[in-house]
Length: 92
Image 1 (tube, rainbow, N blue to C red):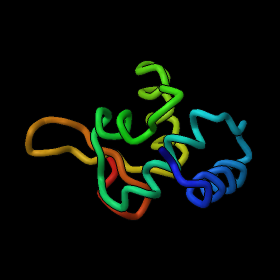
Image 2: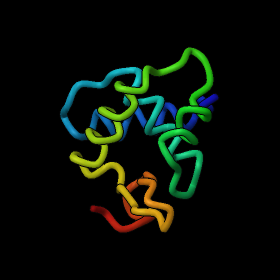
Image 3: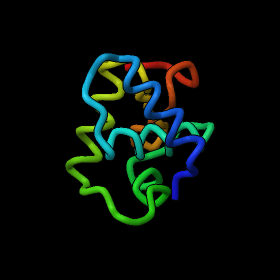
Image 4: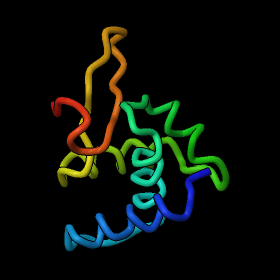
């Protein structure tokens, strides 16, 4: 479950983009902020807790975060993409 302080920070970062703030975007970014390291889609899904975020929505939110410079997509040696907040890994 994402902590309130991470969720508040995530909301502020999303608002700063000038784009629409949605709860899935805030929760996913909040989970990345809490993680402090790159996480796979499945790890993020587990960290979100309840209520669950649909997998397709999660993929779309992660892509949106990357496209807006809030997250990086990091290729793993196991061929699994991992995501981290901007500044914590190489973007692709």
